Length: 104
Image (cartoon, rainbow, N blue to C red; front, top):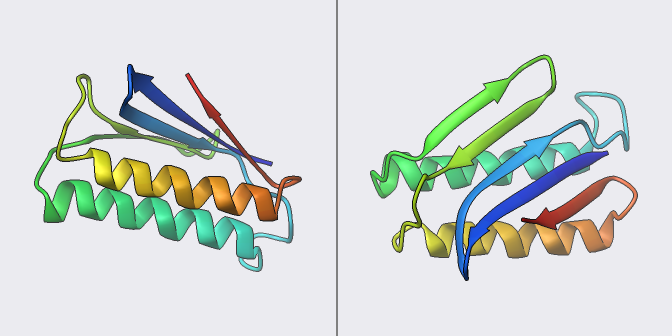
């Protein structure tokens, strides 16, 4: 199962962490994993390449984990992070056995 944790400060998103493999199908054939990966890559591109916000990106290959975010809330980042949250939440409703969303 893929687990996505969104970190908040009040109403604002600070960061998100994605870990694990959905397990719906073997690697390379998993549409849930592909959808998650594509959304995360798009969010990182929007935050860092388009908006130039310098979001921190940390990866851990062994744990299949990526964390992207900020130390303090970024007003400019909120639409991107909100959209990612909504998209992944809807995806988790379609595939609840393979994707879990949480907030802290």
